[in-house]
Amino acid sequence: MSLAPVGAALRAAPDVDNATRRRNMRVLIQLRWIAAIGQLVTIELVGQTLDLALPTTAMATVVVLLIGFNLASWWRWRHGGMVSEHAVLIALLVDVAALTAQLYMSGGTDNPFAFLYLLQVTIGAVLLRSVSSWVLLAVAVLGFIAVSSLH
Image (cartoon, rainbow, N blue to C red):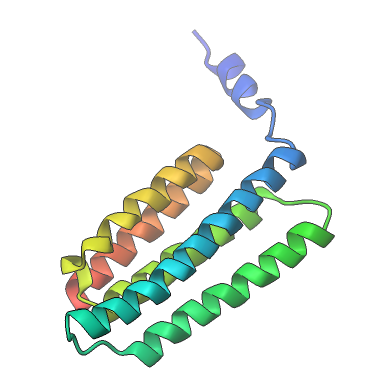
């Protein structure tokens, strides 16, 4: 029994169309705005109410970079034609990198927001094809390992 027809069917699977990827990117941009605002509020509240010594300047810098990336993504999404699978993957990888940096500076895996790696991987599993989802998972796992071992 040959698996060639199955392989051909998998290769011929229809790609998500550009309109769907554009909607997905719009949702990611909206979620990133919520995340950036949430990070700024959390940094401020934790610094004031829990009297923890956080590297607020460095953490705010990560948020500012995330906001800059979000503005660039929004501009590209609004003025560009195609939103590729790679663009969605890169957006999610930037989110994982920002999460990793924030966790590194604020308690590592003891930080209650460490569970957000699961959110990133779940979003990737929904929006990306399997190969890209596995790449995102691998980067998230590496980020978690780095945060848990280096913090």
